[in-house]
Image (tube, rainbow, N blue to C red; front, side):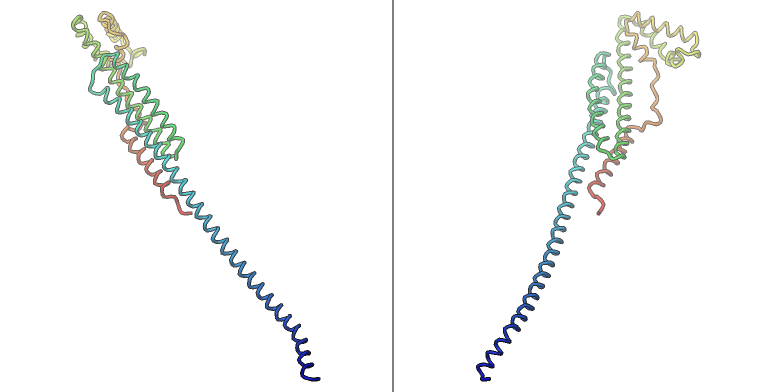
Length: 262
């Protein structure tokens, strides 16, 4: 065989070999591309999950901050309503003596403040948490009792004012009223019971007659003689209840501001 024939034969044998080598190279390239694509997909998935987790975490944080703002505003509004209610009663009643009608008007004017306090207390109780809810109930009850005590004092002062106002026309009768009032205060709790003595009934009847003569409203006799109610032992004093509420509210807001790590 001449050289030209040998070259042709080699060329014919080399073509299939080249095809085989080419196929191996193609398969290797495809496998590499596949692995590269798979690795890229894994990385993309990880990046997506990290981004999604970040968005979720930011969303939770934004929600907690929004929640904290809502509760803080509710706590502050309730606290302000309590102070407005108690301060208004103290400013109007303590150390002052008004005619009966003016005192009654002042008491009626407090009703709107009491209603506002009650409304804001319910908002706080709905917002919670339990510690703040309990402190809210205690503070509302303590504030109400404090104002009722101030109102009782104001009514007593008005009753004294109305009685003394008759002195210029009924001096002797008014003097006698003030002599009998301390006696009536001593037996007042026995009225209507078997413990009430006949002498006490005589004093009470004389006072009724004197009030009628002086044209003093009969209801003021009760105001002047009725003993002041003692504060129930299960009622927290106002200043203590106020401090308890502020402490509970601060603790609740702190927990919201710094949520536990997931």
